[in-house]
Length: 590
Ligand SMILES: Nc1nc2c(ncn2[C@@H]2O[C@H](COP(=O)(O)OP(=O)(O)OP(=O)(O)O)[C@@H](O)[C@H]2O)c(=O)[nH]1
Ligand SMILES: [Mg+2]
Image (tube, rainbow, N blue to C red; front, top):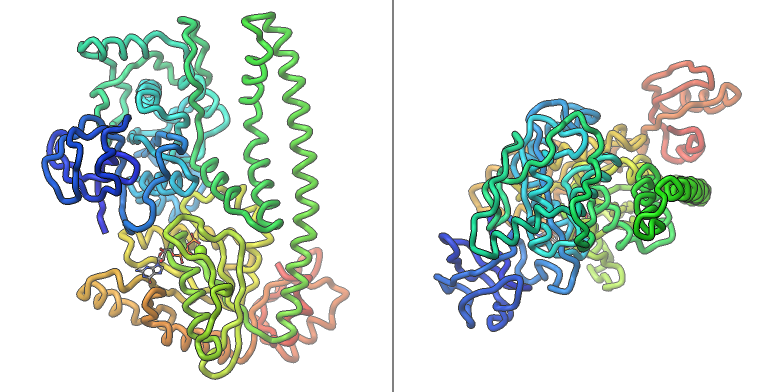
């Protein structure tokens, strides 16, 4: 596996920088086409392994290549995007609302650069072509523009120079930050052209002041400093600047949340999945509709008509848009409620049939689907599993969106159900977690969770933290027992793998390889002892209405009471319930 900075020469051709503009070509599928803009190579027939290839101009990104056989990036025809990472050194930042542990985990990922690399993989998963990236470290977020304004203008120049049509920020932007950044990216300012003209004439670009932020790694070819136009940090809105009337191509501003929502909307295959994604998108859009107002105002402006009149029209339009969106949200909510009721019904049937349910959870790309396939192959009769039964497992973020359940037979003959679920990611949008309630309830109601971890990732611990913090947001999930499956052990060297195996000397952790099958037998044993030998009891948390004394009696006579609390609406119980009776408590469970 290669890690570090790679230069994308063109399409699927990659090179590792050596010095200056000289690079080693690592992979090229079309050696003769490296000259095509915007990435040119001065040698016509560069071959992999050849050194001293002089590169005129490159689109670059820090990148990890796990698998050369998979297309690393979408082809040249896909939409070009530019990425911006942010790191804040003070605690007072956009992670302030998250729990201390998960904020630390996210902060570690951001500081290491992994977060920005992950954003690039998210962009690829969305079918976008990353043409450049940059990162800024600041003491705290700027209220108006998140990053420093000078940096924002530099981003605008770089993104435009590289032909990007969208700039994605590696966090969730507030609606007003998105609006201000949109203005900057599309400002009709002469400065951009002055700087470009100076460059074209072989002169040094104008010296740009520092805005207090520390640039960690900029795009190749970027200037050392950058313009500082307006540094009034108290200013919440970036004012319109009527400098000239040169029309710029529209550059859109997006954030991590929008990117994740986009991937989800591309992947959703079932009606339930589509509804959930639409719900999350609508809730994300609602507070951001004002940006559409700006757009509508421009459209109806017709070259500077009465602004009062336009604004009036725009405001009416935005009210109409908001009303329609709210109506759509309540409609989807109703549909999702009926989906939830159906899922509940299925679960009730399953628990009557006394078949334990094991849910695979974990960070995206950890190997959950591969493990489901491995378990299906291993445990189906005579190991014959038709391709139809295998789920899609690929080196791509969010390959799985809709849950899939398979019946698996343990060596003892006992059967259980395994559910493959959507993967998690750091800073998973809360609108998505809320919208995917019906799907995620499968996790909260499972009898056992297998937390699949890609232990070969240098960020495995931060990924574990991100998953655990997401699980805490899913009702009931924290009560379900967990087995940790440290996956991809085959990707580690013998010595490190030995150390990792020694560290898994805990009852609830198993080292496995979903690819080679190593450790699967041990995992099955752990599952068997967790779900089958646990006396066929299941832990529940429920609020029983005061007129259901029969259920309380049942718990006392046949279950094990863990905790009781008397609330206004009924008795809140945490208890172990014999599996055949679990369905009786379903409608009261939390
Ligand atoms: N070497 C190796 N590769 C693995 C192993 N398990 C999974 N992979 C690879 O890792 C990539 C991701 O695997 P998936 O099973 O799709 O991961 P996932 O957790 O289902 O991912 P999402 O559905 O995107 O959340 C694929 O390219 C797999 O072939 C393993 O044990 N060893
Ligand atoms: Mg998957």
